[in-house]
Picture 1: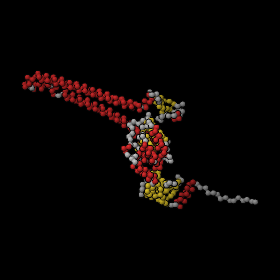
Picture 2 (picture 1 turned 120 degrees about the horizontal axis):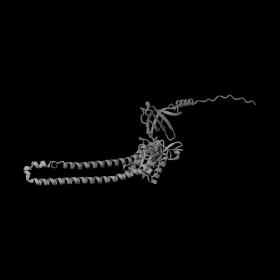
Picture 3 (picture 1 turned 45 degrees about the horizontal axis):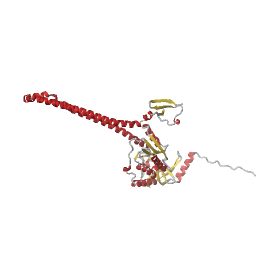
Length: 424
């Protein structure tokens, strides 16, 4: 039996660009312009005037762009969580290989599910009194032990560490690492707040994360996190997202910071306020003592420069004819007056000296007490006890041998000076 080879037709092999253009032609030809309803997410409105956003529902997402000419006629400003209807053309962005909707019209279709949940919980907690200013606690004046609840790998912890450790390297920071987005994040955040409270010894808590979409920030809108913040015995600073972002945590916390960096600045500001207050008290003391001294000196000068004391002879001469019989009496009275004035001047000087000594003694005690407090906070006090601090050439603190490599130049700070070394 003879077998003959069947003639094979070569298979068509597309280039990526060719196939992408074919897909684009099919999508645009089959669907054309459509209406789509969904919830807005990841809204971006750059300076170009174009709008970029995602339409989503429970099962899928669709990327969209609305160019500046069409965005001017939109019936609603796009915001995360807003439910909208969008009319546009389905196409493919060939450079990225992604299909998208080029929107021409946008109109509101009601609140999105997340936004509705946010407003419902906000209303519930407000009615319970969790947002009342009267339950908000002030930050301590000199916080030295700070707990931080955030992701160990996010930008938030780097910003907080950078601000606090750069300006106050002897401050104690305790990180409770948690997930800050996705499933289970809210439970981790609430558990970390409770754990730090149970541990004790902390002056203030910073709870937060960097910016993101409404979905990214959603764990901080969960009731479990709000309840944990509300029952915290330690004052809580909420630092979630950017300045324009607001979460339920912001309303419940004792203080809201627009960013994680701003939260660190608020903590440092308490110590700066104390130092400024101390300096102001010293200035007021010096000013008060100076004014008191000038007052006594002026009274003394006026008494010493009066007419009676400057020219007693003229007074006697004008009344010589009429007061000849009283000359001896007048001289006696003048001597008594001079003696009395001198005695008063001496008393004023003694009182002034005693007053100044007492005021200086009192303020010296206050200054020594504050100086002791400030000295205890100084990183030099730690060095005086025999410790040292080692820095890399870029100024970062060496905490582990893994932070340096052979050949690196390092600087070791001691109480009496600095030692420059090379890692072998």
